[in-house]
Length: 369
Ligand code: NAD
Ligand code: TDX
Figure 1 (cartoon, protein in one colour):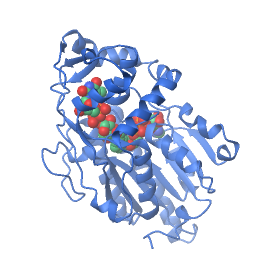
Figure 2 (spheres, protein in one colour; figure 1 turned 180 degrees about the vertical axis):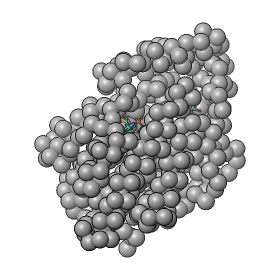
Figure 3 (cartoon, helix red, strand yellow; figure 1 turned 90 degrees about the vertical axis):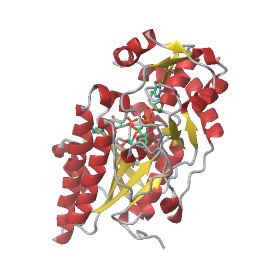
Figure 4 (cartoon, helix red, strand yellow; figure 1 turned 60 degrees about the horizontal axis):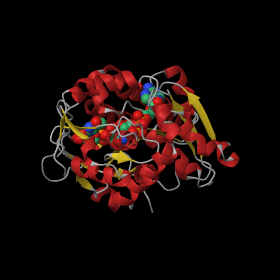
């Protein structure tokens, strides 16, 4: 029996508050759960930053039964006046909301701290209030809070695999904010007895990912025969987790995780960036000559790799292979050009010029492989 079976968030008709549910991984989580038609009801709270879009929830809206179990609220997790009632109405809160792109955190860190630290604090304070209502008999049962964190909190891992008990050593404003967010969440477990679980997923890819990230950037650039800006020597290593697996891991921890515990969610597919790029070019049928070596990301983490024994013991492991996952992702981007062209509008040109303009002007060709 799982540690949490019988809890309201595992029961039929559970009410979930999914923050950041209009983003890449959050919307996958929402689509995946509502598609099962098991009665689960979801409220999405999302600020709709440049990275979020209601279009990511379109498949839910297209099905009347699923749409009836989804409520969408545009709002900020750092705004207590919005958050309090939504948290009060939920059996569990699953927090995906974050600024999520490392390069943007290097250009402008502040929003990362506001959402990743203050926003998490506001959500936790609302949970604390509900837990006090449980103690005074005003609420029938306790809530669960799931903080979606990342392998980046371990910092760059030159050898071996990170364990959940390893020290945190974040090295970018993004990962420092993520580390702060999960530490704060765990402190609410220890201090106030809130039921908190934390997931640390690895690099994620798949449909609906904003084209600022490596795989969708290189796929959409390749489809337009634009240069692919590879940072430094391109030998940095990442562990590539398909978004359906990442959402599945978060749901598994929501349902079966033990309160106060942290779970790595690796894919076990560690590849150097150059190899990822080679496979993208193969899948899009484009030449290596599109690849340009550009100035490296400052403080670029060389490698992430996590040990997955703990979540495997809980009954979860990743199931999507990289070649299959990448082929389906490229197919999705080919078929959804309107979606990615919208994502590459608004502030995109200004961001692209700032991040890549000088880099590409000074770039050089790079040897294949
Ligand atoms: P994303 O940028 O695609 O989505 C983030 C969503 O949060 C967007 O819809 C955005 O509008 C929303 N949001 C941002 N600030 C908000 C605020 N203040 N209030 C309410 N909503 C807000 O990110 P993603 O890739 O889907 O990542 C989701 C979570 O998973 C993040 O917490 C991220 O740190 C974590 N994560 C991501 C990866 C990855 O490879 N993408 C890997 C591990 C962990
Ligand atoms: O233009 C690029 N060129 C390039 O060489 C970009 C955008 C990336 N890269 C490299 C940097 C990394 O080594 O590719 C690798 C992957 O980069 P990103 O897609 O930016 O991901 P990363 O920095 O590894 O962080 C991701 O995984 C962990 C997510 O963005 C985070 O939200 C998550 O926590």
